[in-house]
Figure 1 (cartoon, rainbow, N blue to C red):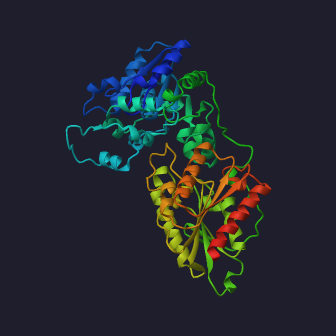
Figure 2: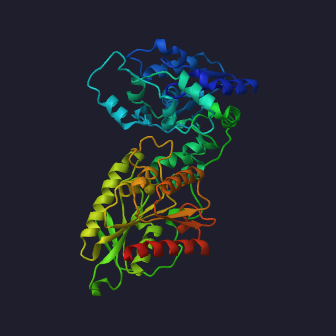
Length: 507
């Protein structure tokens, strides 16, 4: 017999699992929704010393009282922290850990990263002393704030109101005390249940693994499986039947496996969709300049296109993005048409690194504009994938020398589960002050749903402020189509986008 121990996220309690627990019990499986100390109807039990360790011991008591042959621990959002802590101390009792729209915290990590407000995180992390009697509790989100903690897709107004009404303060120590793990928990089978409306998908997991990021290689372990649910961050409220069924299947060892090895090159290392003659290439620090053949003979400087990769890309990944065939292809292509193509490696190694990546791009642009072979008054910025967020600063306050911003299959607003991204990186907001700056947006027909939503949000905002946006569609195109879709439609889209960007530079 398999028993399910269900652990809720921040500000909630066992009540959130009621419908899921009922379905599991109807299927014959014992289900134990847990209300942690200080949460749900146990708010009175918390105090200033309530922390993550308190919640881990709460779970240990539940595990020790459970006599089922197999125990599956299910952690939602913050709940995965005490789940992992308890599993690490009772590994012999745990058959599987389920991450329900939850991350993969490691030894030493703090759940504070889940708090969507950077100012609140900073205040909690650097608090010098209590300001009042409630210093040790974080107030729950108001009705309108829940969407900042995760996508509310699938929740009716009544259910969302109940979520807000029943929410309780979260003890600060549960978020600031680091999680401590040994290697025991790493040997346990795991299942990730990804909520696509909250920005997670199996395709994204496979893309991260394909990049060669060592942090994600553990996801190729055959003991790790995945499921997707087409809903927001609170699936136990929006899709309780599907959640119960998925948990049963996870306990049975079902689910999608991510291949440890692929039979072909990763998508980002496949050839560029066009054969481009080789042009001169110079490397200056993290920046590469792809130069026109006749630049030395020219009596005037040339415009430049700065290509901005996405990520996050782990610093140990090789080759680095500026050497990926797609970016080299673009750099060489525009060089062949008389402009300077610029590729660079910025330091977007983690979702918290957007600020640092933005500084790298600004530094690269300054370097390029200062080069005597470049016309510093004619520069375009071209962002790809999650690099799309890095266009926000330039859209918000375009300098006069920035003649165009381009974006290919971009992410144009932080995905709902990207809590660490500074709110400044929202092109869908920044476009309101872009004026008549030309924007060339290449959109792929087969885009991932969670990304397509951000593009539509951006286009709706652009239409309201009458922004100058040209949309180039790629029929049957995929995310990263330049090295995946070697079709006439894909080549035509690249040619049209390049012609458009260079046209804006030459006006």
